[in-house]
Length: 227
Image (cartoon, rainbow, N blue to C red; front, side, top):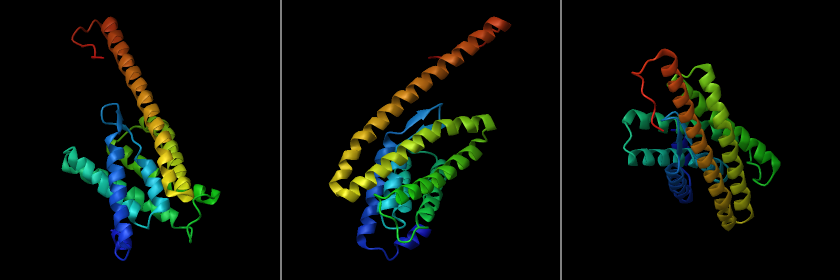
């Protein structure tokens, strides 16, 4: 709602930016990596969020990210409750991040260290919302929540770094943002290999635990997991 109010009197270019951010988020969501069934997600949408917060008109990041999240989830035909939660989570996260970014008036130059520190704080606020709400919904025990943080923080840091790099490149020359595609692609490939390794390790550990229980208790009713 706040984002809509901010955009009520915005120029047409801001509305075009909403559509651009929505498309970018939808594209980034297309390459989301999943670990552990449906419990952990590794996406590059955070980089889009950071770039939009710094470069776009107030409200554009929240509206565009929410629109992109909605479009992708509708395309996947997810349950209505899942869509409502995910889009609400995105809207709340980005609203808080934009609020933190707006604490500096006027907004600092993207090429200055002060802007980097502020955008890190804004991104950290968004990350805190997503991590907290996800943990509450999944009702994770403390150990599980800490494990999620250990997995999520490196990805968050990578997304923030890519977002800041995109802002600096755009500030130098708009065409320069195309250079960000290279590290962004490398980040995705690194995440994919890392996630694949984690999945394989979890499968092997599950296999070993099941085999040990069968050997110890003679419970042949248990089936070895498929790898």
